[in-house]
Image (cartoon, rainbow, N blue to C red):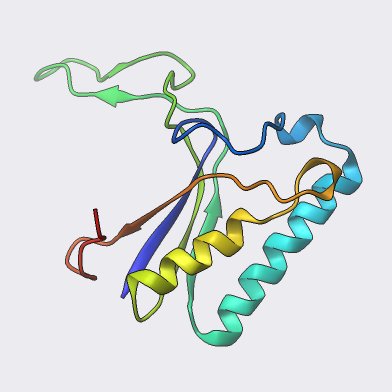
Length: 135
């Protein structure tokens, strides 16, 4: 069963730990964070649970249809939303519980001072792929 683990720039419940944007971190803190992420993904690959992962740039825009023959409407060069997605990881695991366990492990990636970020990550099953998540 495939699940999407979403990482948001902003949005979700209030953070457990306040930390600034990564561009404000010390270089060694960024390196430690990226090493953790690579090691996490390597473990997923070794266990056959890895499907795909991507990081997204913060730039973007919302776009909508504005009628036949008219150009699409955008909100500007940057999306103004609290839910802007930073990136994702797709896992193929046997259960919702395993997907949640992996998201918890990913949430422990180190941030400033080497402390776990404890950031909120969103876990979503693919429609028709997995049973619905418990509510």
